[in-house]
Image (cartoon, rainbow, N blue to C red; front, side):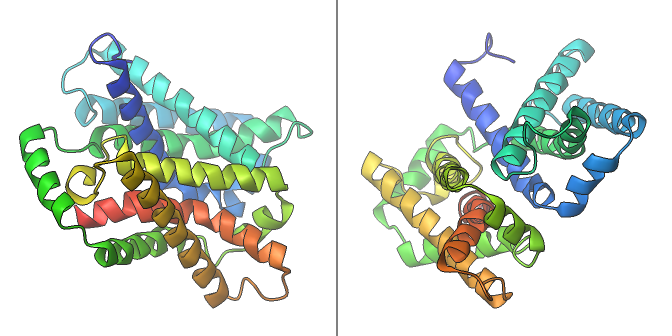
Length: 282
């Protein structure tokens, strides 16, 4: 979409912002047992109507608020189809990595769970693409970036990252779903969740021109980006462990169970420590 009118790198950043927005706005729903169950028991006709309503909302949003100010109805439909497609793929991946869908399940159960969640994810993707991009005034960004690069405030950055992590992750920290996902997930899936958390958090801070990144993040070197990403994930894990302890989710668990829970909750916490932090600061 739009690759003929803009560099491929910019299109990739645009979609990466969309994916981040989709996760930021819908991850608590992807961690919600009631929605898993709704997808399992829903009849095909209501699911179809729900999907159609979701496509209609995407088209309306893209026409009036989306990233392109002027496009035809056909272009808006194409953009909405692409966003819904990305939303379905992203939803399927998250549900798979958290163990909510598996090849042994029936097609109706898998498709039901994906559709129920994907509509919200797709709308989040559309919002993320259009609303979460950084300032395009490069001269202004460059001047502000230079000022901040010369005076980094590590303690302030960590404090606001903690606020962002707790703000996002606290929506799911008290729930049973974190325990269910953690104890049912295989080790390799926990590793995938950890790597995904680090990758998305690092991309938000240093690659995709996320809203607020140019004016709040020091990223002059690869070393700074690596250290900043690791600090971000450390903040996410610490805040996750604290919230799980506070809500009594460690009671009676082995060390493995505690670590698994922390990694699972670390995913939304990492989004908060990166994307949420930038939104708070900007």
